[in-house]
Image (cartoon, rainbow, N blue to C red; front, side):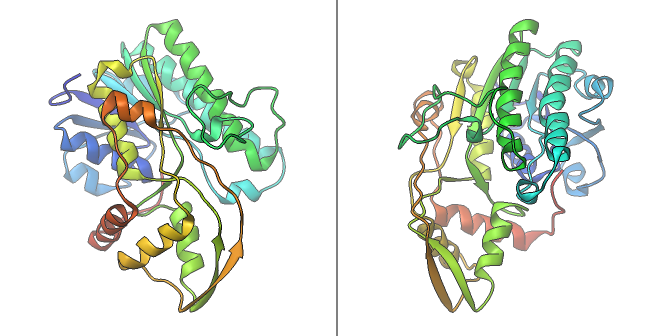
Length: 314
């Protein structure tokens, strides 16, 4: 699909990743429609020509109106919060089920009702079960309905079930679907991973993990992968790991410092011998996607945060 002049709806357009997706689509001269709970939350998007339509993930009719007339939908809105991983009780699972699973059902049913036949669904590498292999590709088994549920894994299971539901509904309604599975995402105004890193690195004396290999991906690169998937028909019917490379977390800290980020005078290493990586060869081969270096991406992050004070997530 040539994106120039095409109308693309983005759920969660005012959130952290959503704003990167909007940037990537506008850069390709698409006409972007933000389908969000609060259309006035980020006035900057309206000023840049993004059409904002009000819709809640729980309201299928609102979503259908939000998708009216568009050429494709990016199903991006989801519930993710580091804080909720440490909560207790059934309420955490119920919140994730309502937003991530039922919200996905409503998005796809609404897209079908609005006559939309092209969707890119933002999933996650958190969907994978038994992550013991050194590198995991897109065919690795996923979590399922039978997976043991705890507040700590409510996000992972709900994202797995929501992606599986997306594939079933796409087949049922004749929707051409691509799913992207990013790993931990960093970037400007990130309320989760970057917020934790900044807290760890802000005191004069601090602790920081050592021996940890955690794949990280820049939000701008995930957004570029979504735009490339919309542009290239080879992506239809496929899932893609849009993930970072196998670097130690110490490399991220060094790049953050080089980009002008604050770091402690003294850092005490805490051994955390964990290693996980994901194979993103498919998206590289099919779509020509690439990761920017930590330094390049973090310089852009610092510049974006210096330019404007964006609000939090959608």
